[in-house]
Image (cartoon, rainbow, N blue to C red; front, side, top):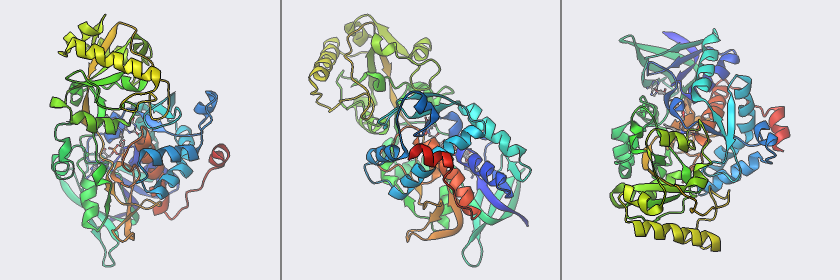
Amino acid sequence: MDSTDLIILGAGLAGLCAAVEAGEQGASVLLLEKQPDVGGSSLLSGRYMAFAGTPMQQEKGLDDSSQALIDDMMSVGGGVNDRELVDAYGAHQLETYHWLVDHGVEFKSLQAVSGHSIPRGHTIDSDQAIGTLFQRAQELPNVTIYLDAPAKRLLSDAAGRVDRVYYEMDGEARITLAEKGILLTSGGFSQSEELLAQFAPHLKSALRIGGLGNKGDGLLMAWEHGAWIRELPYLNGTYGFHPTADGPIKHQGLAFYKGAIIVNGNGKRFVNESLSYKLLGNAALKQPNGVSYQIWDQTVMDQSVPGDKLYDFDKLANHGLVYQANTLEELARDIDIDPATLKQTVSEYNEAIKTGSDPFGRKTLTHNYGELIPIENGPFYAFRTTVAMLATYAGVAVNTKAQVINPYQEPVLGLYAAGEIAGGFHGAGYMTGSSLGKASVFGRIAALSALGLDVQRSEKTSKSSS
Ligand SMILES: Cc1cc2nc3c(=O)[nH]c(=O)nc-3n(C[C@H](O)[C@H](O)[C@H](O)COP(=O)(O)OP(=O)(O)OC[C@H]3O[C@@H](n4cnc5c(N)ncnc54)[C@H](O)[C@@H]3O)c2cc1C
């Protein structure tokens, strides 16, 4: 039987970070990817990564720290996230940012994004980032990568240690032995109708837009070997997508984090727009016929960020997806809402933000960042918006070494998990950038732990986050 030190299942961001880290440590690695191409959901992502204390922030005079990031993460997660996992992220996030930069990943810009009390959304170009890490993995002579090679089952030895992967390639069944560990980096189950129907029936009408291979295979394989599961009750969709986003282009716009309001098909607001877009998604799905629109004015439009996945409102308009009108009444007619109601909704909102008495409790643009601005400067814009199931987050229980654990908190010997497949980290809410962030941080941790190496805090990390 073939053997190798590590077998990694899934070549998204977590799997590629793990493969490169392990390969550079001298381990022999077999990386299996089910799809014909690498990248998974990581390649489709909105591209934000949550890091604190970075040189990009320092250049903008932003004083941030790992501790502040941890505090925001716990607050957004409603305190039900696993504090030890969040602390581990805090301890290794800056070191991982530098690791990615050292490996050629380019961070393009910095934005204020959902859930953060300071601009912390570091954008990557996912093609560039995934392409660079994939190339590095291919250059390492001790890393073997098989595409179109779905893992099917895990096998264990007589002592219960998970040590072999049964997979398929070129129409053949194969089994390879992992001497040091098997890493599950196979993503979530946002494309599994069966698992979504079981665990998130409330998301039946949400669009499905995650990586095509993300059907929860790793979860099923881990469950068979006794893994516990975490965060299933907090499965949410993400608000901000155009109804056509399940097609080839994932049109998305979050004008509400720049000052837009959200109204339902009756022209009424129904939520505090500064909340996490996961919570907005829950609120939007409960509206009559699931219909809602973002409404904004020229002041917000002027904040369009060219090329940004979330904030390029001009691009959405150029694609014909944004309604534009000189008055709110005309806009209302265009979107089939009663003009008087929409006008009243906007004027009540403008008045409420002047007096600081918004009935939905909105005080800021995102989380607790950014000053609200009235919607009064025409032309006015509307963007039909819906909810998408793009990432599941709930997943196998892991400890801070990324070891998969059973319901009694004991490691399932030989088995590690990182990235979207791992639960426990986000808690009841979700902050932008924490999923790609977690994939990179814990992908590296999983590889090093499986090799019996400590994840050292780099000098850079200790200096910058102290
Ligand atoms: C449209 C969109 C926008 C997003 N925006 C953001 C954002 O801005 N910031 C953020 O932090 N997160 C974002 N996310 C979420 C984030 O992209 C994912 O949670 C993250 O990329 C998961 O990384 P991963 O490596 O764990 O999984 P993936 O990148 O999904 O990789 C998993 C891989 O495993 C493979 N696989 C599955 N089963 C098997 C098997 N049996 N055998 C072998 N291989 C298998 C899959 O084919 C896939 O390639 C977004 C997601 C989407 C879809």
